[in-house]
Amino acid sequence: MAQVLEFKLPDLGEGLTEAEIVRWLVDVGDVVTIDQPVVEVETAKAMVEVPCPYGGVVTARFGEEGAELPVGAPLLTVAVESAEGAAVRGTSASGPSADRNTGSGEGTRPSGDGTGPAGESSGNVLVGYGTAAPAARRRRVRPSAFTAPLSSAPTPSSSPTSSAGLGAGEPPTAASTVASASAPASASAPVPASAADSGRVEGADEDRGPVAVVSPLVRRLARQHGLDLRHIAGSGRDGLILRADVESAIRGADDERSATSEVRSVSESEPVAAGERIALRGVRGAVADKLSRSRREIPDATCWVDADATELMAARAAMNGAGTGSGGAVPKISVLALLARICTAALSRYPELNSTVDTDAREIVRLPAVHLGFAAQTERGLVVPVVRDAHSRNAESISAEIGRLTEAARAGKLTPAQLTGGTFTLNNYGVFGVDGSTPIINHPEAAMLGVGRIVAKPWVHQGELAVRQVVQLSLTFDHRVCDGGTAGGFLRYVADCVEQPALLLRAL
Image (cartoon, rainbow, N blue to C red):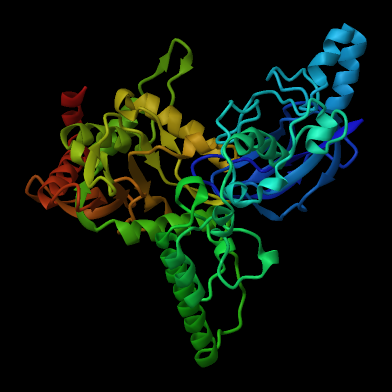
């Protein structure tokens, strides 16, 4: 016999709530093994192959290629060997002793090694999605259980079929487990009949069933506002509905009516112009959400300065023309890598800008390590890969890591871990041929350095007018973590290092 198990889209990390199906890797009827990739999905972070934690035959797929599914939605179903079949196999292999372990109707528990019977999985996990057997936890009686008549409690029996109404070898449902667990308590501690009726809403029909509420005030408040208590989740013990729960539901209903009214008013007075509609989802949607949150939560300010980058460009040319090493040609060092190294030196002097704000605790959290993000434009949109522990790297190491992450970004192979956890961002918008910008901070960071194009301009050098390579640097910072003096000091130090790269020797 086979048991059909449903595999749902797991949490792919960092609060991602949805993913788009890019390509199915299996068809209905295919046989899959445990942890075999079954679908390739694209999130706001990266493209990921999702492995199935079950082994068996694919019986259904949910969603076509190009469809967007929320986390927790069914991906596919797999027919695997049922617990009853496992019990029969165990009996034939181990004799009567094995039968005693499967006769309770609870099914075989997974061992987590990926080799057991139905319902077992490998134990490997994606972020927030466990495939191993759940840890034992205390069962809690559902709120409706203590309001149900005593006569509904089943009589304990040694027979699994008669005690829960289950067929031989079928695992018990959550309802039968709760009922069987509460039966002994009901027999030893009778409950007055009035306690059972106290959970019903006054004037409600009998077929509405009991609800977990005991206060007449709560029932009256719900009735006055036309609320159905059966649709309100209780925050009290064992799901008891409190007055605060009803008041919260009232406010929610009022807000919904107000929003509906506003939408109706706008739609009637200002018709939406016809045009192409592009869904805000995937990378574009994630960027929109993050930038909107940054503008909404962070009181940012921007300062900028022009700097003579002639000496920096000469230093880079000298580094890249230094000859060959033992392993062949010396890797080229990019301008972005040099600017990144300057940033890490500046952050060591001004650690206020390598921080984040805990709004709930009203605290500034200064971070010990510099995980440097850099903006990269790809065919999928703007992404920000992160160079881990940039403060401990030299310019050559940073340049190599930036190159590796950039190639992965262009190929769409960056993992969520490579796109998160940054503490400071460097944005080189000069590659688009522009001189300046006012960057939006990459929430929840506290600052971002923007770099314009390096272009030949007239510049006063050593008291004389000369043509020099000039770049504009702009710093956007969270005004909660520091004042203008700190931000200006940071930006001035960066500009000084651009103009005189020898200053970096002090930071080595």
